[in-house]
Length: 96
Image 1 (tube, rainbow, N blue to C red):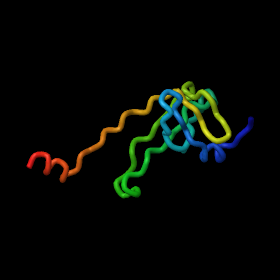
Image 2 (cartoon, rainbow, N blue to C red; image 1 turned 135 degrees about the horizontal axis):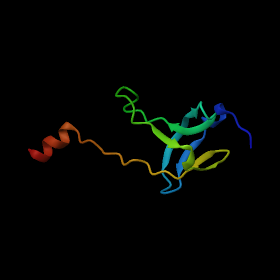
Image 3 (tube, rainbow, N blue to C red; image 1 turned 90 degrees about the vertical axis):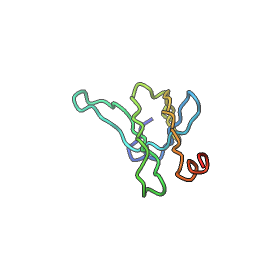
């Protein structure tokens, strides 16, 4: 199957380890010395409509890709656990 990089951007990236949806393929890393693909990049999700930045990007090595389908890319990758920060009011009511 031949495909273009622009067509790859609309594909969802899913982990086969736990079935987690990691996001959509955003970019590719290319090793210019060996002229080969090194990794795919899934951009981090926006925090509060992008006003507070984004979460960290997932850089998935090319060796962890198991299948590239027409709608999704399956990867053997464990997404890092997200730590949820507690807000000011949650801490206030817990201690007060």
